[in-house]
Amino acid sequence: MGQNNQKSSRRVSRGPFDLEEKEMRDLGYKAIDILVDRWTSLRAQNVWAGGTRKEMEAIFRQHPPERPSSSLSVMTEAVEQVLTRAARIDHPRFFAFVPSSPTWPSVIADALVSGFNIFQGTWLESAAPSQVELVVLDWFREWIGFPELSGGILTSGGSAANLNALVVARGEVDELDRAVVYCSDQGHSSLERAARMVGIRDCNIRIVPSTQKYCIDLDLLKKAIQKDKASGLNPKVVCGNGGATNTGIVDPLEGLAEICQSENLWFHVDASYGGFSVLTQEGKTSLEGIELADSVTLDPHKWLFQPYEVGCLMVRDLQLLESAFRVTPDYLQDMDLGLEHVNFCDRGLQLTRSARAFKIWVSVKTFGMKLFREAIQNGLDLVRDADLYVRESDTLELMADASLGIVCFIVNPRGFDLNKEELEALNSAVLDDIVESGYAMISSTKLKGQFALRLCVMNHTARKEDVLGVLKTIEMTAERLATCE
Ligand SMILES: Cc1ncc(COP(=O)(O)O)c(C=O)c1O
Image (cartoon, rainbow, N blue to C red; front, top):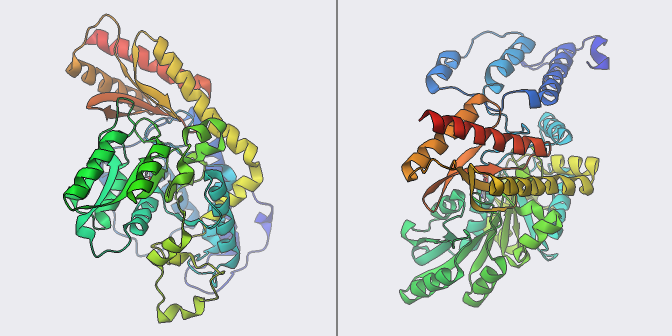
C-alpha cells in the first residue's frame, strides 16, 4: 500500500468527477495490488476463461446507473466480473494465435501516459513524447537495417501499419482500377483487408500460392506479374512475410526485392509477427533482405513485450509517408513549428494519438537490450525443443518445419490408421479438451487445406517444461480420446 495513504485528504479541483485525494490514492493502490496479485499468481491460474453470449448478456446487460457508487467497489467488482472472464494472453502456457506478454514497467508506463493524457498528434502539444517516438523509431530503423533518411510511425497494431503502408504504396489514385497487389496465400488477412480499404478491386488482389515450405513461390509471382502486365493491369505492390502467422515462415525477401526492383513495384514486408527477432543472430539471418523493403510493419505488442496497442510502420522514403498523409487545415496552423518538429498526425490516420513510444522507451531503459535479445532467443529455443519433441513422438506429426516461434503439427496416434475426417475430428477434439481444461491454450489452422494444431511461443516467462508439458498433455489427450472413439 502507498505511503501517502494516511495524508489528509484534499479535493484536487472542482469538477463534477473529482474524487477526494484519499479516494484517488486508494483506488490507484488497489489497482496496483490487483495487478501485482494477478501477475505473481498467473502461472497457477487457468489460461482460458470465457463464456457464451447468453451467459455474458445475463451478467452484463444493464442500464447505465443514474446515481454514483463507491469508486473502489465499482472497480473491484468490474475487475472480478469483466477482466477475469477472458483468456490470459500473457500466461506462460498461452501458445495460441500470437501471444503477447508485456513487461511490468511498460504496463505502468502505459498507465502513466493515460494519467498524463498525452496528446501526441502534434509537436506543440507533446515535444518530449514526440522526440521519444523519434528516438524509438530510430532504434527500430537501425535494427532492420533501413537507411538514415527513412522513418515511420507507431500505430495501434500490425493491421493499421499494413493499411498505412498500402496507402503510401498506392501512390496516385487515378489509375486505381488497374492497380494490382500481390501477397502469398500465407499472408495475413490484414493485407487483403488493407488492399480493399485503399481501393484495390477484389479481382486485382492476387493471392500467390506458396511452395511446399509455405514460402511465396517466386516463379508463380513473376508469372502473375507478367500476365497482369500483358492484360493491361498495373502491378503495384508485393507484400512479403517477415514471419507468416500460420507457420512463422519468412518469404525469400532478397528474391522479392529483386523482382520488385526490376518490375518497379513497391516492396512491403509484413514483419508484424517476426520482425523483432532481428535482434538475435538467428532472426537476423532468417530476415535477411528486410533492409531492401520500401516499407516494413513491426508489432512491438508482439515480440517486443509491450502491452496492447502498439504497432509500427517504417518507410524507406519518409517523404513519401508524409506526403501520403499530410493535410494542413487552418485550425491546426499553430502546429507548424518547422519541419524538424515532427507532427505525427502527418504520418498516419490519427490526429489524437497516445504516446505509444513511452512504454517501449521505459522498458528498454529498465532492462537493457541484452535481456530483450535473450527473451526473444528463449522463444526461438523453445520452439526448436518443441520441433524435436514432435519429430520423435509416436503420436505427433510435424506439419511444417518450425520457424521463428511457431510449430505446426497434428496428433496421429500410431496404430489407429485414421482417415482425413477422423484425424480432423480427433485433432479438434484434442484442441477443445486442452483449452477447456484451462491448463494451456493452443490454436489450430489449415495448411494447404489440412487441419493443423499450432503452438506460438513468444512469452518471456515460458519455460521448457511449459512447452514440453503441453505437448505431453496433447499426446495423452489424443491417446485417451482415440481409444474412446
Ligand atoms: C503477420 C501478421 N501481420 C499482421 C498482423 C495483425 O497485427 P495486429 O493484430 O497487431 O493488428 C498479425 C497478427 O497476428 C500478424 O501475425
